[in-house]
Amino acid sequence: MTLDDLDARLALRAAAAPEDSYTAKLLSRGIEKCAQKLGEEATEAVIAAVTANKPELVKESADVLYHLLVVLRAAGVPLADVMAELDARTAQSGLAEKAARQNQPGQDQG
Image 1 (cartoon, helix red, strand yellow):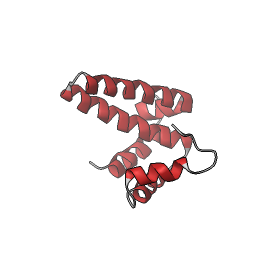
Image 2: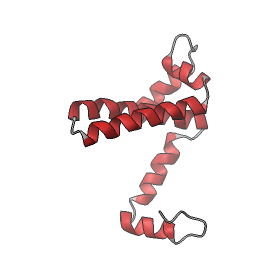
Image 3: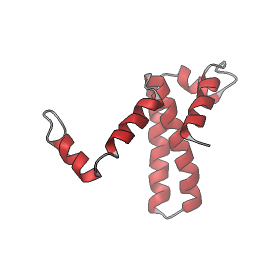
């Protein structure tokens, strides 16, 4: 399965009634709840990573990807926009890209 496949599946489930779909239920609760769930899953993935629990890291990573796509959908941000940003970033090294962002006015230096 690709991220595009998952995003397409989410679109179908988002159109269902909230009582029939976890995705629709989550989206109906608003972006704040969607973002909270993403944060919870990301924290669980971090814990699995630092404790070297690979099977749990696999499961939590799947949860992170799913909940990230839910947050993007709740925010009205197409996955294609994120993929285009990633594509643009691969045109240069990560260090050069970070340096370019830090040199822009108003950008966080951290």
